[in-house]
Image (tube, rainbow, N blue to C red; front, side, top):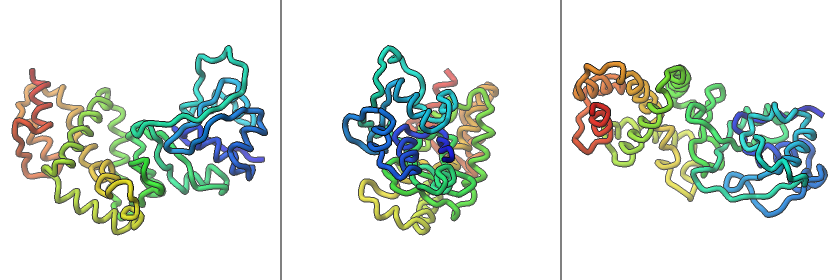
Length: 281
C-alpha cells in the first residue's frame, strides 16, 4: 500500500479521512480498526478530530509515516497527555476563525493517489492560493475552491508575497496591511472600482460562488480580491521604519505609487493615515 502524505497545514480530521478513503473505509471504521476509540460526531471544517498521544502513534504507524515527519499536520504535534495510555479520539467544534479551508483539489488528488480530491488545511496567509493549479479557498464556507485562472496577476502576487517573507518585518507589515485593506473593502474606499471588477471576474468563472447561501460572493472572496493590494501595501509598510525622514504625506505618495493610484486621499479616520500617524509618534 502506498503512503498517503499530509498536505502542509492539513487538519487532522482531513488527513485521517483521506487515509480512510485510500483503504475504502469510513473514518470510524479506520479508527476502530487501528484500536482507536472515537467519541462524538463531527466533520471538517466545522469540527476537528483530537487524538491522544497513543492514537497519534497508531495513526502514524498505519500511515507508515514516522510521527516526527507528520509535522505538516499541526494538530498532530506532541501534547502533554503522554501519561494517558488509551488510544482515543474525539470531535471538537471549531469557531469560525479556527476553521480550515478547502485545499487545492488537484494537489489533494495527487497526494491521495486519486482516492479523493477533498482536503482541509489551516493555511498561512502566504499560501492563500495554489499558483500551480490556479485555485484558492479564502473562506471555510466555500465547499469548492475558487478557480483563479481568469486573474493571472494573482500568481505573480503570490510569488511577490513569498519574497516579502524574507523581510524581518514581514509578519507585522502583513497583519497591518490586511487590516487596512479589509477596512477599505468593507467601507468601499480607494480601490472599490478595481476590486469590484476583480470580484465580477471571479464570479463569472466560478458559478458556485452565487450558489453558496451562507455568505455573499463579496464576503467569501474578500481576501482574494484584495490580495494584490494587501501584498503591495505590506511591502511598502515593511520598508517605512527604515525611512524616518519621510513625512506622512510622503509615505502616502509612496504607497499610492505602490498601489498604482494617482494619489491616496485620506482623512484623519482613514486606517492607513491613523497607522502612519501612530508610528511617527
